[in-house]
Length: 429
Image: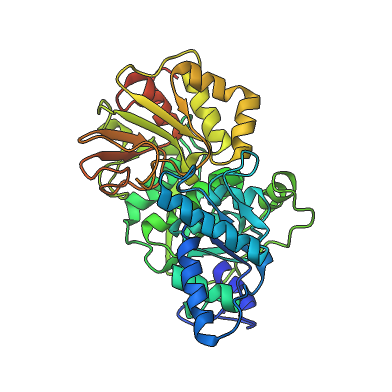
């Protein structure tokens, strides 16, 4: 019986010739990532060694990555102290894949890891963040775990009791219309299958549209696969993956892509033709409450957010700048832009996009997660509404349970910033 991409990756990582959905394995981990919550992992890690009486040692420092992104710069003494604790741990254990707030290395973990060449096709990647699914864009099996599980990985080098997920195959065909793109595709998929539609499953993306899609777009769809409940989202690595790794990430000799077998077994096949897709909006307060933009046009918004691990890349900022160039953000709306990494920020500066945005009235922030989680910059006031390119819109997600968050693409966000209400970016295009 043939295997899916995830099954092949887990078979290799577990030293087996074949595995099937439902098998429980202990795969070797190629990369273990945490952000500021590494402080929690450290506590659990030290407890493990306290019980053994041995000196604490990370199994392989070269396979551990730590990126500060959720609360940078630190917003409180508590956060600053936890970050200090992590820095000291990083130095003690000689962890080289460490990205602090430095202006030349900072950014969101799910952008920094791919652009730094840390994620490779066929790898097993674990992270103490649910959106670790992002890294499936490079053909890796990437999934989120808790702090205690990560402490175990730091100690042993493998993940414990990993159940091989069944896989949903999503076949995407057609060509996107102007002002429609990967964010609209993934919102449409989540709205179609629901927030529980892929629970405990992997989503494998295929089709001509995916093959033509740049890695930046693939990161979007894999990032938000978890919003359908998926354990992982994965695009089988191909020529575009190898191009990105060589040209963008500086990987001289990337490994061969892992492809599914022709007779691989899928629990469901979903077919989507994007040629008829319109801009999509996820309405409060669930990500699967998705509607075509025509149904919400005119909704007043107080805050626009462009950025996050979903849509803070260079092409996202370019799209927003192109719409806002020569225009002004509405007097009744504030607009915040968060580049996904220092590299993205610098390239946006070089291209003039940051100037376009600032002249339009946007506030460009340092690379990081910003208000997405609701604990840092850009919280909502009571009863306010945000339109955001982030990935979640649960109550309190942007710092205020009385607020409302709509999710959209960068094109929709930028067009709406000008009007002060949710606006179809195709209007006047």
